[in-house]
Length: 438
Image (cartoon, rainbow, N blue to C red; front, side):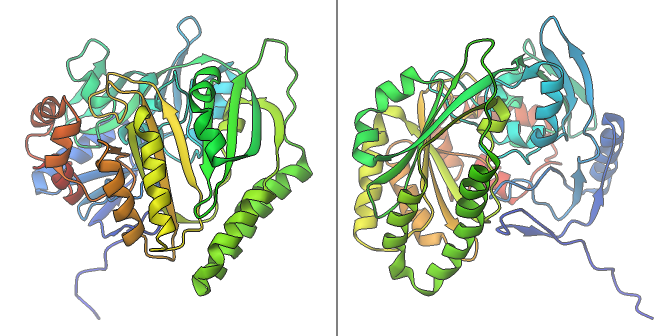
């Protein structure tokens, strides 16, 4: 009979880019239970990290100590019809939350293009969508409940001195257990998608960003082909006209998922095919229009696994960034099959939000999960950082605290809040030690 140490749990994220071995995994159902678990871990000298859907590409949620899975903390706790504020447990996923908000006649003002993330994970990493006058999901936070490194439960509202640190807190200040979200009345979006030449979309960019509620485009590397998406609110009384079943199966399932998986497996064997296949992909996705609930328009199925790096750059730098990426592709360092996604948000006042005091363009680069992204992502990072780029906290980058001090004016203020909330570094891990410097 073996008397050795039992094997630890193996945890990995969705992209299979991070793996860790928690000493134990706990699944609390309440804030009180989280506080008890944090106190016990601190007494044992163990670190603690909360994990949601594992949709971050970085190791921001990894731990070899105590892992807190918040998937059982998924209740909608309170709804104020007058203020349109909704209190939820922080482990609820956006996928669960969106239809529950719709049933209340509400919606979040903006969303990203996937929805498996927990609310805590989405706000803590600065998840965003697109909209030249809109912000990331964390801007909808009106208050949150935080369990600090001592196990104390702190209510952080808009008047609390920690508020602008905790709204995008990286998991460094404590465990977020409840969140109050400022919602808006539920709304329909008129979605328009059409192929467009890259020079044309760049030339029209100011009007596209300013004249549409939500605008973004996808550029197919090694080509001048792009796909433009514009989503706008419709007048009251407009009839819902969702994508037809057959069109959905063709565009969203066959081309964007099944076919794209086959394509990426094929080009690993023959990378020289990529430019020709990207040309074909840019042509197959035809124009379409539909009207649907906001979350049904924002969110797309993404079943092809990939790795991602995304940086926010000043909006005025986008043309130069695209030109420099095109030059790198033209040199044929590598052939890249995944389209580049470009989105936009307005400036906010959250200290470690990528949108802090700056109107941004977001440029996201992707690589199939079975391929090594190192060279491509390093080249893209060099281009982004030359323009003062700020990486999405949940997406791949190699930067550290020295760089972030230069691009976040309130970086030291954030560190001071961290010292107050978690002086013993119960919530640290190697990723946070690198990006925060201690």
